[in-house]
Image (cartoon, rainbow, N blue to C red; front, side):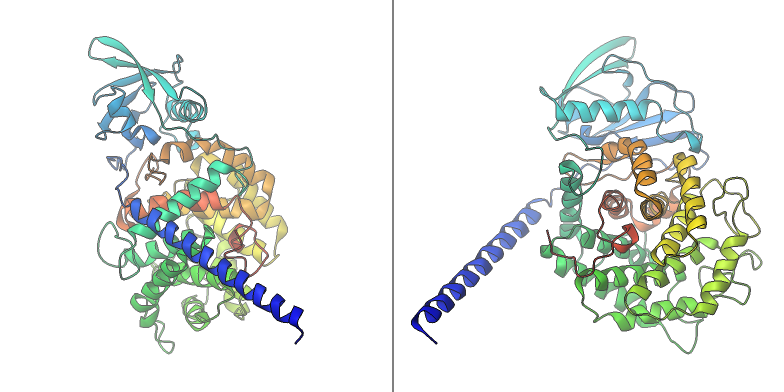
Length: 495
């Protein structure tokens, strides 16, 4: 080695060591920032009105909870968080918000097809403008007893959402990162997030939260992602007995676990969990009946009618696993797909509850997940377009799915993105108010359920699944996760 080569080598070693030191310092600072976020953000006080008589929802960075009933134009304030923007600005429990930025809203409808139209959209758009523009004050007129009170509420500054909602949108990117940071610090030591109840809800929720951390593309979260995976493996996947399909986790768990494991392998190139991924997919194959039906577990409910929501999640898991090297069981795929086809409602073009009940108002989770699965495999382009058209035509139903809002929005937007950017962008614009009303002053997301039953999300835990839902909606604007149109492997940590 010449003298010049020696000094070049020495210089390179020094620069490399300096880069590593800088990177470690950045990660340390980032982890300190995560720890600082342990302050509990405002959680709305929601009542689950299963018949749709009333609809409770968060009021965004105001840190308050509102209520609407069918035909009402004024938002009733049900709760105000201590020391939040609403509290400091004089908004009180019992107030009725009768005008927003000087304008009265159109009437709220409890119809699922009406989506967020009316006072919710008006408040959300006024909030976004107030947060983006000086002097960052929201103008509200409230009816308090016999008096009308004018309020000027100071709100925290933030940029407006860009039209694209892509990873180039500053607000979208920051929102996703803040949610991921929140989930990282609220994860429990065993890798799960606190569910709403006991039982097995924590496995399903952990899969979505782990997927959120992955989508945020931050290497500082890699340990948390692996903890989530290890929790899912120990509590759920470890119970699989390949020789007996009657033993093992519920199909909801097997599918969500497989989706997380597949996306992790595709993102990082780490195939250490491929055996677990294969076990989950094989279990789902073994539980497809001869006529293509599937259920919660091995048994098929509703006198053999089954649940197509299980089929479509299995298809998405298989399609993603195939990208990791898993060999799809063609016979099982076709049997299940046959059942899915028989469950399509002729008028809407969307997937119904089952082949025996093709009509259903909550279409987004089934239709979106199946559109995503087919698009990932480059199959049935005409059917994928049909599903996308149905999701666009009935976009107001996006958060209604099997007593849950989460999977409707998560799978619905995944299917839209894979079916076409224009359709995805069109519906995302309609749901901008949802993202704004979910946003807390701490940067995380509050849960915002549907107009009727959201007991399934209560089972999972409203805070973790609410954060995961909003984050994966935002992530659908990127091209990283394969369920959002990604095609590049080993992308994690590229930001």
